[in-house]
Amino acid sequence: MNEPHARILMVEDEPQVLEINSRMLRRRGYEVLTAQTAMEAYEQLDAGLPDLLILDILLPDGNGLDICRQFRKKCLRPVLFLTGKSDVKDKVAGLMEGGDYYLTKPCQFDEFLAVIQMLLAREQRLMANLQSSRQITIKSLMLDLSIGHAYRDGCDVGLTRTEFSLLRLLAEHPEQIFSAKKLYEALWGTSADGDTGTIRRHIFNLRTKIGADETDEYDIVSVYGKGYLLTCR
Image (cartoon, rainbow, N blue to C red; front, side, top):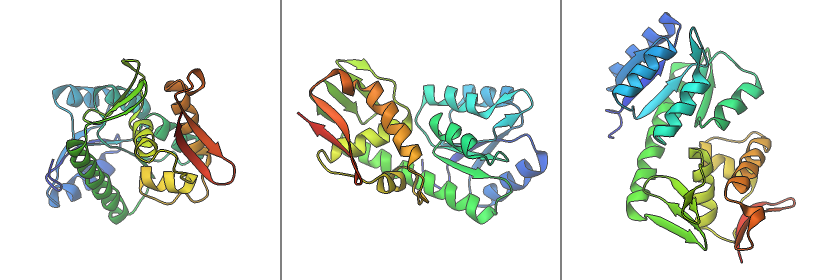
């Protein structure tokens, strides 16, 4: 996947927004596929997975969150939510379902383009890193870097893309404390703006999935006033 020749699927039910954004992206060399309904989006995904998925949340026949959830079952490629829903709870829901970034409409095209470029560039770096190092093992916990899955005692623990990226960062630097701000910036490439709750929820879900409370081999520990670290025993 060579950006800007990446393939983008844009799911948007507002014809004017869809037409303008897709036209502007095509002018910059991207291959843009479009869908105005959830059914059209699923048909496009069945035909082939894009390098980047852009999702509205409210669709005439479905929900962008559901599309994201199904997309995550197939791959870990980046997902950008572009939607008119601006409540914090909606942003959290989008990120928790596996979204990589969340923009609210209306937004400036330059910002929209910058986020797309950032997500595709990050995906390229991730793929390059995966090629250079395939696996991290911590006792019964194993991270398969080539496919972005984590296993405990040989069983896939079912991490989302963001959870896997978080676990990988901590596992590559055991016993090193990362502040919530640093983790947020590493995962989403943007300032946390004081949002520590999102990282806290991801840490909670991650600890549950890897069975941190069920083993004495490893744990993800919260250090009061400083951040989080992965410790091996």
